[in-house]
Length: 436
Ligand code: UD1
Image (cartoon, rainbow, N blue to C red; front, side):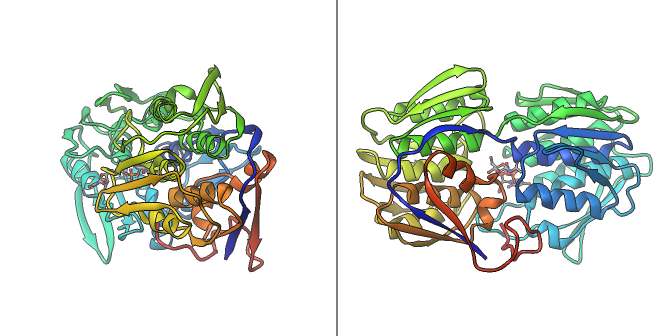
């Protein structure tokens, strides 16, 4: 098990480069299952979830090469099994992204049903209802979801998401590429990652229109071919570094990002007093501004403020003047970081879907525990400004989605180190991983 040890108080200053978006790389890797030709993906972040997806692809018979750093060359020419095993699905829910492509190309798929996890129930009923509407038979067998297409393949259908789902939209979009006729997805997720996947699929020969809007239409084709694609920058990592610069009263140049994808994050952080300048199309300049002031926040699907930035915003609000009410509308049980922040001295009242933060408060270093990916990021941010030493346990959560966060922070002046209590490598998939 590994920990971060942080000594707070340093303003972080300098330049940081943003990695590729893991939430875009994961579906794009799954999309490679749709073709027997090579799919080459650049700007793949070096994070644990990517290693898990790579293992899943290799487990089913695909070949994944890394011809150069952050590039994956995937060949799914010889898929042997259509099953994503429990061992992988339990560590990463996004394994369900294998369902749509397997079902579309091979007519069958078996994926272990993701259990409950640290941030709420997170069912996949909508993905399954979509496949059923496309003619698949879907049933549960020994804890696995089994899906079978009709003998002559999936049929295009119109599906209305009663709740917006990112991976649900991606799964149905991938399934639709090889279905007979037109698939229409209403109330689709509009996240930049959905658009990025559609761009890759179209390069592979798919006919997807409307990605990035609430209505996506896919005209099925006979087969898809190979393609080469560069993954978009990670907007959540970008937002996390904006907060890091602001909360430590530092000054950061954030490179290799896409400010357009971060519009609402930037607008919110400017509203509370952070100074953010758009230097060019891929660079932001962040400084602390005069004084942080509290503001309410409600998380919602894109283009609104993302749930994946809620925890980091909460840490920022512990340093703002006044009272901020934070409402989480996407996931239940996503305030676990709040009780850890309380242990560091934050004044937070935690309700069911609301948390009220009173600021500013002085944070004091403590031993705290990471409970999920974004919660861990909020604790790192708290550690950067806390008086004394903060130790964060279970940092494998942060390794799922942030590429070498401690190395990046150290390079801009933070006093942070990874402490190993065993000889296990930081990104080893064998390491004990809790469901998340
Ligand atoms: C994706 C992101 C995750 C982000 C989340 C919300 C990836 C790999 N992960 O997760 O980082 O926090 O979007 O922006 O892209 N729901 C159902 N039934 C379903 C599917 C979803 O009820 O079949 C509910 C969920 O419980 C949740 C809401 O819909 O309350 C949104 O979930 P969803 O967008 O599906 O999240 P993920 O795609 O798993």
